[in-house]
Image (cartoon, rainbow, N blue to C red):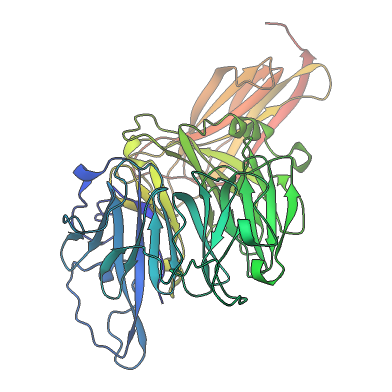
Length: 504
């Protein structure tokens, strides 16, 4: 069995996660990708070097005398060259005769089928075998030819699916079932498992430019398009047809989608904003004022620059949260783009503003494994390290976390001001403390100015005599210190209605 890990091609997999060896960052042209391949070991006793990729944190065992085990191999693309991590360092397929992709490509796709990794850059294709550690050009078997210049790919019903070719962006191509190198669309004898493409299938071409492919199940392959969303139901050689799911929005390019454990699809729309849907239902905005959410988040998501950033969605199974990440196309991004997270437990959004550019994710992989700690998101970051979200951490790998929560606005339903008289808080005893700031404003959409501030200590705090008034009140709790964290157990305050609202 082979699984995939996606992370930054510039990664130096050491430090936070165990594998060592400097990745050839000098060769990196743009944000790119890497994968983790797992090869099944059948009753083989394998001795592994301490620096081997198989000693990576997710590895369960490296010796399988009586049962199957898993050997992990990390592979990475950098500047169009494939590198595989060996016993002590990266081994590059960088010889003059080795297959390569376009060094200047700003997006690669990779898919797993038949225990091999297939990859492309929108111009050319390669195939890598983790078992034999061989990299070759993807060459068609038989009389067919590999469709040229396809920008995206997927695996559906045992077929390698290619789409969005440069010449015909609405076309799609499927290999023969379980034969990813067989693209013979016109065999002597027609069979249900032969290769097929839009021009000769009853389903026809996709009605719109293809931006994303979602193999939802063996029953549905969803085409996220530029202006619409379509569902291919069933196999195209067995009556499969296109059904329109939406004509009000399409999907952003690339891995702009994810699924939760219940099969709900989340995606970033081609017009901006985050949606969710199931194959039998039309898409719906994830952030909606009818759900009591902060709709300003949705407005900010609509304004993202998709010519500068590729929007990638991920599902955090450990925390039951959706992540919305901006991944730069540029070679050397200097700004720190915002990310967002949405909790299915609280139905709430919040911004994730990184404290340092090096922490910026360039790719994301949802890991799984035998141990509970194996099942989490892994981020490949700009500075070349693999990282994960750790609930016990009190810093971002040496960078302080600016952790704050803003409560408000607090206002009276009448046209009067309100006063916060006293504030009382109980913080987790085993954690650190935090500061508090009270703001007043005449506008419910802005914080206004600070009128009171102080600190709260771990454990029970005495009542604090705040006594500040305004048309709208806000309270912010915050801790910006490295190696500190805090948790709020309870918070209360006395709010009193005062006189008529003043105009300042």
